[in-house]
Image (tube, rainbow, N blue to C red; front, side, top):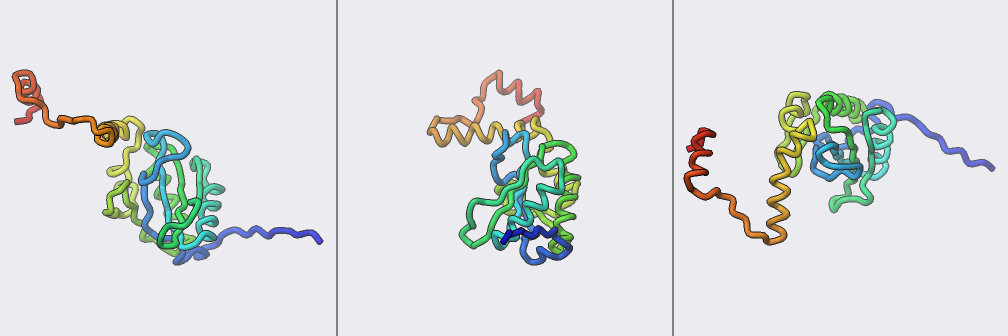
Length: 181
């Protein structure tokens, strides 16, 4: 007897109440490359099956998605994560908004919110909010976070850090030129 597996597509409402309408952006590291080049979205599902369904939907439906993956295990509260990686570009806000809108059809939800990095505050998922909060180019990402990463590494390595510039003629001239008093 031959065993044929039946593959069905997802329909509107199939993932209702199974996917959390709050997702994160850049909370997790990219597995495909440098975080400055790649935006990582993380959605939360209440079980492994819906997480896999969501990942398959995303990977098959968007040519701009670089990778989709389901967490290797469940979190402490029994939830599963779905990771989506896309290029850090000026088109990302539109792409993310389109993605959440389409997932909203599967979940019967149109109230999408996101968190950025480790900040617990949530924001309404609009292209404008994404554009204002998420760095959209590798250069803007590096500019914002390279110093933060260097400070963290120095702190972990217990390298003494002086975060206040000394007061002398040179630093005073810089402060005056910059308009800092």
